[in-house]
Length: 366
Image (cartoon, rainbow, N blue to C red; front, side, top):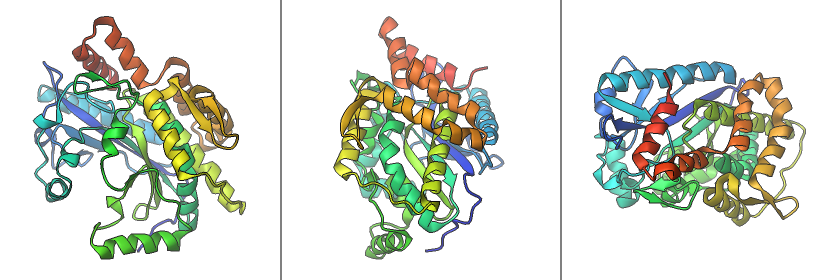
């Protein structure tokens, strides 16, 4: 397998999956083909025609990626408005049903539906993916293994999908259990090194169950083609400053793990079932519950754990030039994640259209 983990380290790229909405009803609208333009490669289709993806180019630092992402959100907002549509960002749409959504007519997506059937059809969910550059394949595996322990707190911070199919689900992230129905998702395996990773992926390819490594949809995965470690655990964020706060936090986490590798240190072992249990607690309660602090085996509030990480990684963020963007994490801790903010809007009038309208307003303000 060819890999491009050549550096420079800590470059960063962001992908966001956004909702395409009817301007009157605020329901999902299967209108991606209307928005696609051969001259605008920054707007990409996803599985459903009511979803679009925007992706920054690889950037040297978070301030650079911030400028690109803000510009992309404004652009898709304006393109959508020109077609009497709206754009919104959250982990799920609060009331639209997957049965009403059309599939994008591309071979990959038709083949995906053929292979996974209803499991893929019901995947009307919207995620945030962050890529961070790493300078070496062994280091990339070390970082990916180490990031597994951070998945639950990243989900707790980013949880932004409390409503689904007009149901107040009781979960902070309903997106997580919906996506869990897919194969090859969730907390990834722990690999013994690059050779072990390459051998296991080759086994799956030669067995005919996947075409390549991009058919592994784990929460964290090495991306050999881009030379990055990709973190995929988060719900899409309504406010761009929260996307950037998570990106800054992840970049700092990767820097810490790269330095850990360079120092010749070994990662602590934690059972996969405990990582998965923490992830469930994060999806259920977001920042309003507790997670197990694995080194001490004691329950700690998610907010306290998030604050501890924020304080510990702030120096790394300063070194990377992203201290200002990291303040998005402080805002999530102090004022609530997206799920909590959606629920505040809903409790006023029990009106899910009002919730979506607020999401649209906050996604790309005028």
